[in-house]
Image (cartoon, rainbow over all chains, first blue to last red; front, top):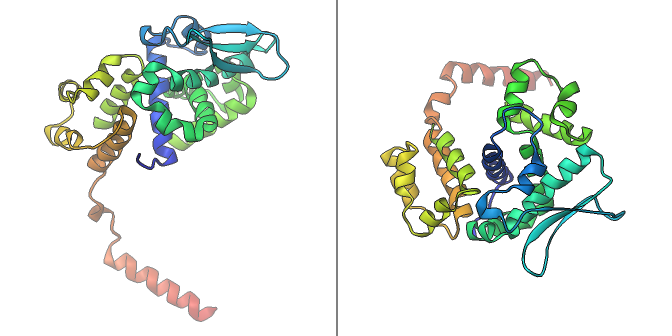
Length: 167
Length: 96
């Protein structure tokens, strides 16, 4: 296995997020991540779904049932912004463990840094480059970013910093 | 342009299994051709040794980046500028 630099891993994750964003075909934020989980691309149909649960232990977690169908189990009482981010973050775990993801070789390059990868992927999926660039072009600033993209404030701040580094 | 094409290919691979199938069959060249990769770059990419599609993507990223990076000789400072900088530094050392 080759050694992969953090920037190379981030580039790869940005493009995975881009592929799913393009599949959704949305032109304006917020990106409907829950719709993606409920109506996934055909190749991921066995791997994605949403199940609401009562829990005080976690916001969301991905798990596979004995029949190998995968779902993100999400706390029913999460506010919208936290829910969207948690679903997007767990989506990467679903991709990594899916048959298609394993065929792509995702576990080998993403598992060593999975938590960091999942959070970066979620930020990129919920605020893709194309939508962030359009938002900036219209004069959008950091103050309204979280609201426009329906992100938790700390996540929005991180994503804004990511975008500043790239632009 | 090539990096955009590579981004597009990697993005497509998460929803379209034909990309990974083509890679596994060693038959990626028609896709690279359709995406507008130059012959030289396609030859370079076809020589990459990767154990998976994801690994290939990262190696391709390096190859495309190297291909698109301008030759560094244009970034060298002029000899005159270099001498002035040295002169400045020597002056500071003396003052210190």
